[in-house]
Amino acid sequence: MTGRSVDLDPRTHAVRRDIADIRLAEYVFAPHYAVPMIRPVARTALLRSGRDEASDTMVDLKPGDSFEVLEIAGVSAWGVARPSGLVGYVEAAALDLSTTDAT
Image: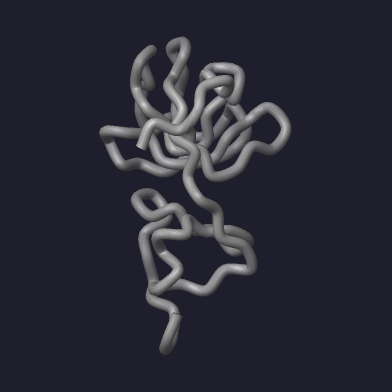
């Protein structure tokens, strides 16, 4: 990265204070960058704005949708839902984590 970080909308850009999508490295500084792991949604799930179940629902994910996993912590995965492009948290058990990337 050269120059200063830019402000990006965390609802549509996978960036937090502690981690960011590697594709944003030229725009923001983060202590850690993650390469997305594309995983299929295995069962209906909710993409939420935060880790806990009380967080706002952003979109419903359906089996067969893709989710770009950037972090798995506890029972939740953080990343980008496709095709909506929204960034949030989903229950990790709703994803097929056994498959390999299909980029």
